[in-house]
Image 1 (tube, helix red, strand yellow):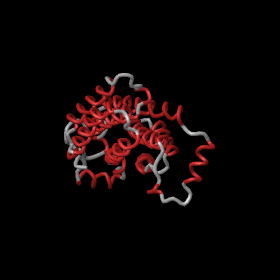
Image 2 (image 1 turned 90 degrees about the horizontal axis):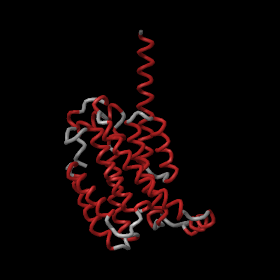
Image 3 (image 1 turned 180 degrees about the vertical axis):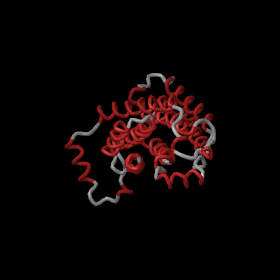
Length: 251
């Protein structure tokens, strides 16, 4: 993804927080896959076509680093979804995806600021200056999380049904398994929780971020972004603690 420069990546490798910085790249990539999967399996309502077309256009703008334009398109898609007659937004998959995407843009703005200014970042002190944007991002992530969770609360299979599903997949290669709707919701929820964890991390709520990452992994153990962010956050905290202790000893 073009928004992350080689210089910034090099800097962050030294600081051991590169995985925190590139997490939004992984999230965006995952949602390109989710879009294709959902059109095939859950896109039964033709009314979704126009807003999700706008959503796809916004994704492309996001990849190109056109964040302000992407945000406008995402919000346009969100408005179009709200205008679909009879649509229950409280547990709608597409509405949750779009809100997660809006939150991702605000999180990026909150961490880096507006514009393509990654080259101006020289240390962690230059990150997360826009608390208001990060709080906005958290609000959109919460809308997404609540929608996924509500659907799962109503449609999650029973223990017996889960056992039967697992048994039916014995000996089947992972790449040959077709995910059930509830599994897609779980993975999407896991992704939004990962984003929320990052927002909380930059707001200084380490316990909240840790809880969000752990919940994301409980839903989807294969969420590599959550794994990487949690590990990286702990490494940075340990590094900062060691530096503080050393300064105390040096006095």
